[in-house]
Length: 199
Image (tube, rainbow, N blue to C red; front, top):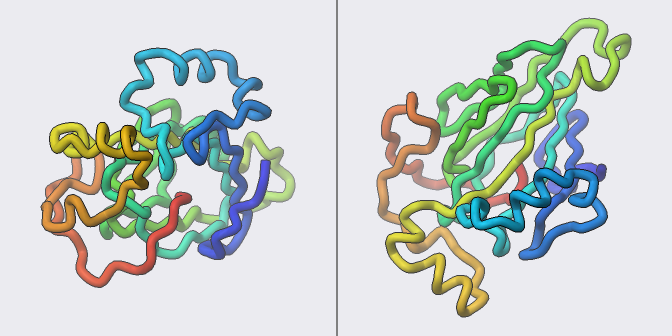
């Protein structure tokens, strides 16, 4: 585990990179053989393995706040799979995407477009110091997926062939849905802050 270094948060936020900078992080990924097998199979074809895509574990403790920010590209969608939620709850608030609350549900995947402004405000819980890590932490498996529009427009193949890093500009005028199916279609927000890769 290593701390997040982007200066976006207050509180405890750690990550364990499993795939980053276009390659597996073998020393970490070897501890998760089923995931390692999936990432090396054709099932993982939708995973954005090229930079800035990543697969990681993200761990936060209650009271953590991550300021509003945007991902570096809209070539990707970000998947969160909640593995641990504070106090063993099956549901937890804290993530907002494009101004809309997007709760985590234990053992359920949630996909959102992280090029839209998003933030985290994980509510504090009483007696957090008395609880073990497994009872107090929010841990998610984070997986970046290729945006379907990147496939349709041939941008994915272009990035693979040329080694180009995807940028936001290709879909700049699109109106897209920032989150999972129950979210309505949102217009892209103007004047977004500088982008960051981790959330």
